Length: 483
Length: 148
Image (cartoon, rainbow over all chains, first blue to last red; front, side, top):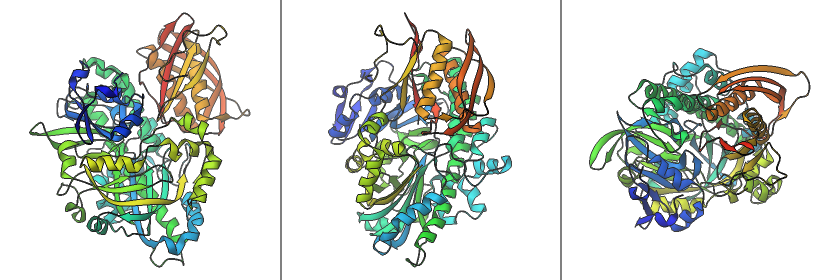
């Protein structure tokens, strides 16, 4: 087991696990965190998993670990690793089962003070409009051809059906559509699971929150994003549902044999992988992109449903109830990008698992209004605390593979959270603080209690301290909807 | 049980088969043990259903026959649970009676159960994370991590 004392401090907010720590490490690990956050990892397997990630064939530069890190399976949550094209590998387990799980932020000009008494009604309306819960299907059931279109075109599929604006699509990572998505390598099972779940939230840590802009830290960036102090926003967190889970399941299974055939030895079977330039690697990449597009479309449909509910619930109490898109970005994804690594520009597959892209000013692919300030980074905090809007920086490009943190990061296990916190009491506590709550399951609510997470402000302080992001605004929840 | 700890060696009164939830920061981990591979597979299925908080209807019983082949015992275990997760997700079916025949790493399963009337939690997938079936003087044991 890797111990905290094996870390070398290389800056006020940066730590390194050198390759000397374990013989099979191909590159070092760079952690971004305060000492307190590192200690919060405790004795979980995060550091071990980060070291395991450095053994992926073709990994270059260093594995970067964000301050919201916690143990996952195979690869740590909060980990970023780049493998070089064409000889490096792609690892489904290093991207995760919920492919393109991500966050979308919509913002309004509705002031909380004008509608404060309506938060219960708004939460109920959002809950009714956006299907959620374990295994829940939605109001759409996509025929096979329609599912194919959604998986090829992502959010742009939704736009063609009138469920997205041009601005929504432009303000989504990759324009809401990854090129190279193919349905050929996607199993029948994934299609069956995906067909009834388009436009659904799911359960677990997925949520919709209504948040108020509590503090603006960067006026210019906030203006570009249309964020106004005191106004309401809607944050949506979900992914590719059963479609993505099945794609990953299928490939982790088939790659068990593939890794052996390619002579790849790994410290954990969950990290199984295939060379990017192999038929198996290309098949997974195409299927993963289809799942990523499914998720972009899913969040777009949910945004459309949320807009309807928002307007309906606040009708007559606010003049302009439009919710414009601030940004939508993934935090479980494998992306082909170019980065300057060890003095050379390289084409790499950046595996981000529980980490977001965070491109700095001038990066290609950003809409014109964000090109000068950098890409918005959305960091939802634990339920009932706060969320942050940040922007990527040049430093994130130089030292963090253009990446940033994705949330607060868990601190307590789900079972410990359930044992120490009762769902009903938590709901009461949140409601006493003026937060309306709609939850499909009270034990599920308890598992996601704020006490189970790290302090999101401390996580943001670390990424800002390390220079890989800048603060734009702090948001505070006023309504929580959980599956 | 502490993280990373094993069931072995068991106290004398330890049941010969069973499952137990293990602390895991983000996901769910289950320790599973049994006298042989069929028993371990069945306990893993029951444990997974227990984590999901499934309630199965007693009416209109349903039967399924599964045939699975795998490269090794670990893969057989994950494949079996994958099948059960898929049936729960796509057909709303779960099982409470298992007749499992294992020859090497091939499984023939006769399952009896019913429709799911209640679910507490969603399991996204069964992972291979640190998965290893270990032989013990009492049979077999392992721990499984589920993505939730």
